[in-house]
Image (cartoon, rainbow, N blue to C red):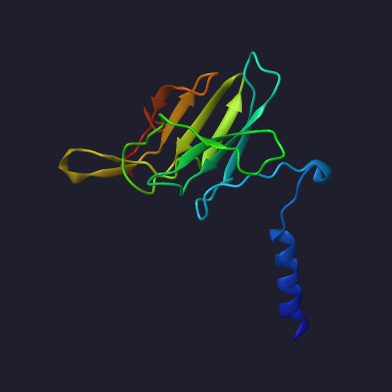
Length: 151
């Protein structure tokens, strides 16, 4: 009976371990402590660039989360916080919890964005931002727009 809890603990420890596809050439980046830096990561490549970059979400950084841009390098501290992306609804929006990149464009979302309407109603819609090939904000959109929201 003593072995059962040890077996379960050992099995869970194996599940919680991290991995790297290429351990000999690991790219390690560090962000602000307790920011969940690295919660979501996407590989981004400009149309006119031969060097891809990493887009790294930190949903607990600052008031509502942030997106970071990191070059592929041997340095741990060379990431830059992207400016101009603001979920504008206060704290705890988790901007950077979802990061995607494809075709020279990127998208970052704040899934816990809350839309406040007249009458004091609050709706958890989420909010997404599209970034152009220079990682400048190009569009803001509501992923729930046009969908049934009443329950």
